[in-house]
Amino acid sequence: MHSSDDSRIETLAVHAGEHRPGPEGSVVFPIYQGTVFATQPGEGYHDIRYIRLNSTPSQQYLHGKLAALEGAEAALATSSGMAAVTTILHTLLRAGDHLLVGDTLYGGTHNFLTDHAEDLGWTYTFVDPHEPSTWAAARRPNTKAFLVETITNPLMRVGRLREVVAFAKAEGLVTVVDNTFASPVNFRPLAAGFDLVFHSATKYLNGHSDLVAGCVAGSTELVDRVRHKLNIYGGTLDPHAGFLLARGLKTLALRIGAQNANASVLASFLAGHEKVAAVNYAGLADHPDHAHASELLSGFGGMLSFRLAGGLPAAEAFLDALRLPTVAPSLGGIESLVTRPAITSHAGMSPADRERVGVTDDLIRFSCGIEHSDDLIADLTRALDKV
Ligand code: PLP
Image (cartoon, rainbow, N blue to C red; front, side, top):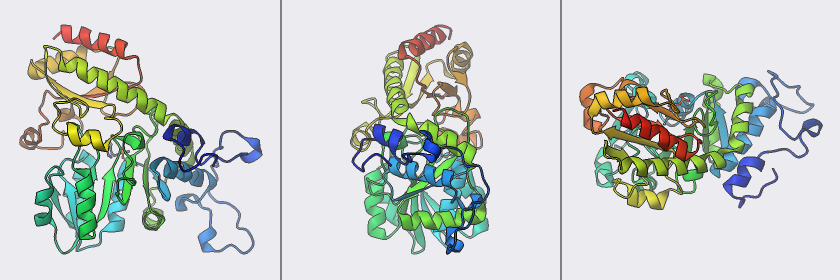
């Protein structure tokens, strides 16, 4: 580790967790693909280096880098973002426990709770993360944790995160935040007082749309508890994917800087276009969360969503006409991606529920890549001309 705790995130991304000199003098930490490593004299069960136990050299290297980026005592890589959130919840909740949860969640997390919590003996209450005055009534004697997301999909809402931390501390609840959409470049949840942060590392942390991974970061005590569950449930990240993830992490700050800038330029462009009816981006002054998001975040992220004045037919024609972004339902990569959440991420919700939370059929979600913003705007202009 050749960076100090007060290094900036650009420096941490490159140097944190690196071994100098690396094995055989290697500048890049290699992939240790081995299943198991030799036991040294005097070592016991807790020293075992076995791949599912997340204790092999490649895994530990990645954990060090992830922890530094989140400013955490400890971090853990998982086989997916879903493995991260489900393992965290299995760690914090036992049968009979209750969870407070923000009411705008990634579809997979939402479905996990609605389809599986009852079988596990857990109860939960959805709360509006913008309405702190409503949380006390939802808290029960058996409530153990409060789960929210930093920037929500697909309306890019930013909840009252400071108030979530203050409420949970006063009530003795563990706070958990999905920081996937923000990345640690735009928001450092642990510094803001959250207990655990997790990511779908499939998105911004890796940034190249070529692997599936997740991560968890927090205090050594909490991360050890999550690791214990993960070791049993088996949602371990393979070292090959871990190598790609560590490589992606080195350019995290550069990529996020470019994606923040592109999203901001695109949001302003779209907001001023006559064929655009609404734009959702917390960096815009008229976004409902702009004021408190400006205090919480150091950047508003690379994701935005919008509606066209012509409704669904216009949205479909627009997507057909785009040339640069690929129409695909993921995010966070260096290439721009675009999708209609009503038929992808939110397809599992009933049409009435979608309408209620503002995920209209014509809503378009845009994940900005690192292309030049002039080229993206030229492509958007051309596509808008066709609708
Ligand atoms: N959290 C958010 C905000 C996501 O967008 C996703 C995936 O899209 C996940 C969690 C789940 O991550 P994964 O697909 O890596 O399991």
